[in-house]
Each structure stands twice: as C-alpha cells, then as structure tokens.
Image (cartoon, rainbow, N blue to C red; front, side):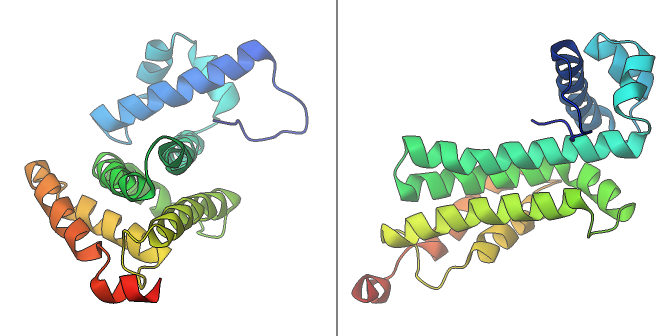
Length: 195
C-alpha cells in the first residue's frame, strides 16, 4: 500500500501511521459502514485524531485511500496466485476472492463512487489495476486450455461483481453460484481444437 506522493518522502513513522490508519479504517468501515466515526478509527489505530487528519483531511480522502488499498491488494493477489498455483486454479481462486471482496466492500465502493468523478487518478489507477489482474489470469487460463477461448477480462470482472452483489444478503449461496459459473467458463472440446 503506497501513500499518495506529495513530492517528498514520508518518514518511516509517518508511513507506519498512514498504513495503520488505512488498515484500521478498512476494518471499521466493514463493521460499521462508511459513516464509522473517525475518532473511533484513530483510537483503534493507536493514533491521535490530529494524526489521522494530517494524513486524511476528511472522510472522503480516507475512504478513497481504503478503496485504493483494497483494490491494489486484490490485484496483487492475481500475481501471487499465479506464482503458487496452476493457471486454472489461480483463475478460480481469484474469482472467489473477487466475489468476497465485492460482498465486503460494495457499500464502501458505492459511497466513494457517488461522491467522486470517475476520471480521478484513483479511479483510473484502480480500473487499470483490476483490469490488468483479470487480463493476466484470463490469458494464463486460456493459454493453459482451462477456460473458454471467448472469455474476456471484463467478463471475469463483471461475473465476480455480479455474483458478489447477488450474494450480498445470502452469502451461503456464493459457493454454489461460483461453482456453477466456473462450470460455464470451462474450456469446451471446440476450444481445445482452437489451441
């Protein structure tokens, strides 16, 4: 997780505080929603409210930092999974993680998107990161012959988002629906002939 660049390097203690606040805010927003008291976030992070405001002058800036950090983490997971699993397994695990992410973060993401221009650097960075992760996984799984050749990176993102929204109030249905979706994405005999 990188703090936004201000032109000068952040001291090590300031960077630790920044990262601790973002991690704590993510947990608080998940538990209490995007209106979680900033004083409570500062208390849980073990910093004063002044320290929180030095890094995040208002709630919207903090929500943006949490959103960016969580998208960066989800995107990095694509690389991590491909290093430790086969392409097909990495694809499946990441779809599951994406669905879980949507179920946990949709309210926060909706709050952020409602108050921000979609052409901001944060949205551009997040869109590029998540599209890059999906592209990497789709290409690897296609090359390995484990998914259909007509699957596009945006399909993976849309499917994960749709499943997460559909299962937000019925999380017990997520695994069954993910399994059905993965069955539909598997390579067919016709795909094998194209490889």
